[in-house]
Image (cartoon, rainbow, N blue to C red):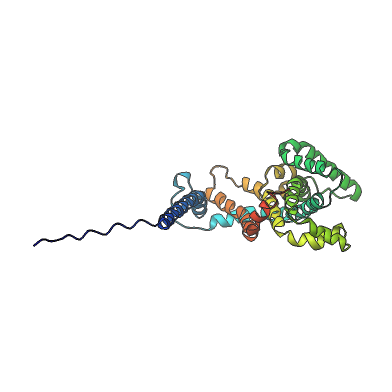
Length: 305
């Protein structure tokens, strides 16, 4: 009796869609792994800062930077806050009004340069941009001389000591003036994306320059304001060079106070780490609150104008 073998069914051809889905899945897995790796690398310094800030001085040693504290203590945070609190308040007095003033001035400049054209507007805008490339060091001596002169004028007019050189108002003035070019650039590029028809319609309805700005332009300026406020707040909060040259001990902001947290015989690493974390909290809060508008406002006008 002859047994007939049944031929095996032919292998089904692989669906191209399945291959594409597998490739896409592998690509997502690789991207996720890379993102996790970058996140871990980025958080390594934060880990060292955090664990060191809770160590007593006897354990805060560079050789044991990776080890967890054997004794957890909040004493470094209390000492850091006591030393840093005056500087944090000075930085608040500098960065909050400075960022708002810079945003308002930049918004007005950008509005005029983008929607109310006048002879020489492009030349003026180019001159604004030149201010972005002037290094701090190049203007430090004339800036100090200017603020000293303003102190003398204020004292001669009011009979009271001037509030510019050696105090927060002078530092605020320097940052606002120095920030005008970048603020103007951001707002101009953003306002270029607003249709000109809206401005023309407002003019037809009888609105003047200020009325158009207030009723038409300002209500849609949220993303640009978020970008400028984050930019200027961070710049002012983290400034060290202007603060050292233009303020005195009573007006030192956070960065200068942070630099001065150091020991004579031993370095208080735990206090320095706690102070560094305290100094970084306000900028993180500002970015968390306004960060969702940041990229939208920063990229506006990138392909136009």
